[in-house]
Length: 239
Image (tube, rainbow, N blue to C red; front, side, top):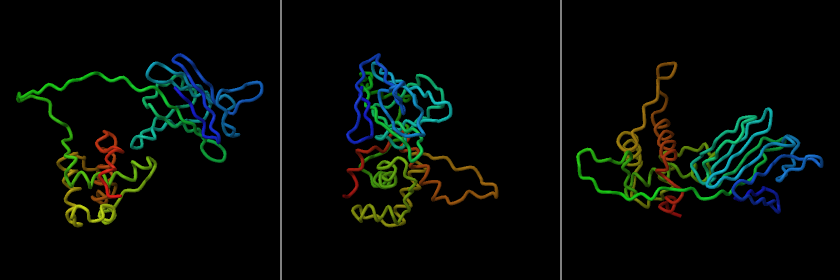
């Protein structure tokens, strides 16, 4: 496991399973393994422990919440509350953010690959055979629309951008012969039949807001939450 600071050149800390490293502002009397020189960061801000196929993080601050983000995911992150000890982190590659005076301080963690079961699919022709929850055809035009919709969040998990239909058309660049009404149809088809997003609750004035807004936002959230659209799918879009 490797911890890499954000400085230039970056500080590197290597950990074997069972090893721990501390991080924070540090002092001559209280040195840390990874120094974060910001007056808003505690002298001893936290600790990281390497395990066989995951890692643990402790927040030793009395007041600050830390955020551990998955740079390779669709906006995935976990929060680490003050004084929380030995929280397991599910990401192989992570960026840890601590609030600072000027900006957020951060560093990277490269952990061991996760272990997976060796599963072999067995055909089952019975009536109660397991079916796909979200049966998406990655060669279909509706999937291309979904990828274009999710692209801003895939490239930047903190992006608030939700593309409009004209913006989706512009991104696809006429490569798949779609019209504005066709894109609207595909979005509605994805929402109703493929991903089955739920209709939002009524607002205080009895309305539901813009249907297009909640549909597109819900599609992005669901597709990225369940890894239905991943970074590798961006290659389907025109350059």
